[in-house]
Image 1 (spheres, helix red, strand yellow):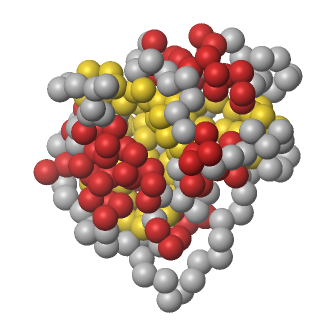
Image 2 (cartoon, helix red, strand yellow; image 1 turned 180 degrees about the vertical axis):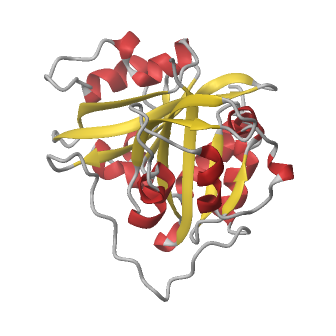
Length: 277
């Protein structure tokens, strides 16, 4: 049996530390792992299921669209990530192994590097519980709880992984400072990270000029990274912005709170990709 690549090892280690629900499939779409935070949604502990082959997990979880119609395998986000190499966002119904049907929302992206090629895909998701589409309320912040250190093991793992991936990723700390973005994000941001270094993300807004699809400016507090960091809720949004190279782009972006072991508030992670015009 072949040994997992470094990307799979890093992704699984990182997922085991984080408080956001995460699942990982390999290039054959076999479900290799889901973390402890995903267990309440999927309805069973990973230790009880182990690896689930691709045809089996679709039948077990029965993903369905908003009307309750089964989502064809070729349209499921994990399939699209493997077969087409496309990231995607979707809201759908999922039936857990406890028999409970839940509305979930999430993003799936290919786990791909220049060195290893496509090795699998990652799903980051959350349960939608109310009519407004808000995810579950986060735990109350503890003023005495330690915040982010750029040397936290979760941040170290995340940076090691992100530097290898072809998926654009940006990370900020609990105070809103930019910690890093990976080389894959540089073409979309318009400048190498080495030229900027850690700065307050709020300082970017004058340069980026983010707007919604109708051209209305997006407030700093409504940006997905701000929602994820301050409200500690995952957030998806499509918006327009001007890169630091002066080029206007349209992106899909999902951000999620970076909550580590013992529910430490470490900041927020943004995953984004250029959308069609």
